Amino acid sequence: MSMFKDVPVDVGVIYEGERIRKEDMHVELGGPKVKEKFELARVKKPEEIEDEKITIIGPDLKDMEEGKTYPFGILIEVAGPTLEPELEGVIERRIHAYCNYIEGFMHLNQRYDIWLRLGKKSFQKGLNSFQYVGKVLHRLFKSELPIIEKIQVTFITDPEKLKELYNEAVQIYEARDARARGLKDEEVDKFYGCILCQSFAPTHVCVITPQRYSNCGAISWFDGRAAANVDPKGPVFTVEKGDLLDPVKGEFSGVNDAVKKKSLGEIMRVWLYTAFGYPHTSCGCFEAVAFYIPEVDGFGIIHRGYRDIAVNGLGFSTLADSTAGGRQVDGFHGISIEYMRSPKFLQADGGWGRVVWLPKEVKERVKDFIPAELLDKVATEEEAKTIDELKTFLKEHNHPVVERWKEEIVAVEEAAPAEAKEEAAPMPVVTATTLPITAGGFKIILKDAKIYAKKVIVRSMKSEKSEKR
Ligand code: SF4
Image (cartoon, rainbow, N blue to C red; front, side, top):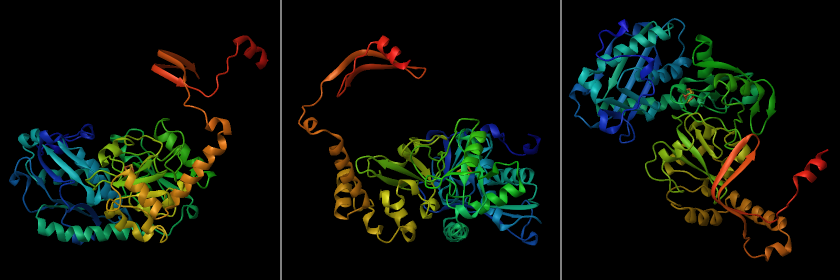
């Protein structure tokens, strides 16, 4: 800790994952209440950088009013003989980890979604200036990434300056993302993985391919390659593809092996291009959630910045909680905005032909990548606010999922024998307050159970045994 003697609070990896609740915060920077916020890393020429310089444009922490929210930007500029612009995305993503090492300073999300809070206790201990945060960032960046020889950090809270830099940052993100577009998963022999989010989601492993962007949307396949080359033992690593086991679902033997190893055996299998079965794990900083809507057999999408409820009546945080934490949850899938621009987007589930609803803001951002014939068939909050409205909209616009409804009805009718259709509602064959079942080495106890069955087969254990022989 001697490195941080001149910083009034503790700094260390133990503070990663620390949450600061609203009632414990001194101030909030960025977050859902403000539009303009960003973090950006740029690789510069050595002569353009004044090493260890910290600049604050706008009010400093000590000038801010307790309990208030402020617009916020962080610009990290670095130089070093082996640094290339390809590393910018990965350097930028480390801001998240290093800010979180500071006691009582919370950083969430990335790029244009950043959300920080300074805790009251840390402010009272003296963390009252961005100067301290800048010092920590300088030292951690240089010690953890020795390829960085010079670094300067700028904090922006002035609304006018922020607007100007925000617009520039958005263009830079777009240029980075566009670079990886066009390259196909089939054309590369390696993928990349990232475990930076394991501090929040211990079993999460991002698999970054050219056509399946990282969940946070901040690390492309090119960024992954650059990071794994300069720091092969770091959180971003090479994933050998191995054998292609399923081209539609996107299953690769090498991906399975890597994920198994990096999740310490928790996740055994991953299907990259589907939200069902063995979907890619969801950490906590994904940009959006694709959620299955059983009533229409399609997917809704909600992004982090959407403050209203989705068409199924749930808000982003509830839907995010349904899948976050490094889990694989059938039908709930953390994704980046860039993945929605990929031809492999939910490929195994029907891709855009299966998406039925998303907020207008996101639709606008990705509209050039939605097949033209589907563009008007996907509803936004302006066309459907409830499932009933959505059903009507989909029918009126002849969305491809409507065909699936017909297929399902036919399938059910075919499966049911003629006489069964006229049958009255089935009666329960078992009712029990406690019903233990033993299966596959597990004991399952059903409480207050009523079991309905079309047919009951009663066999003596003796006859089963003799049948097996
Ligand atoms: S979302 Fe994925 S790529 Fe992004 S920081 Fe987390 S683990 Fe890494």
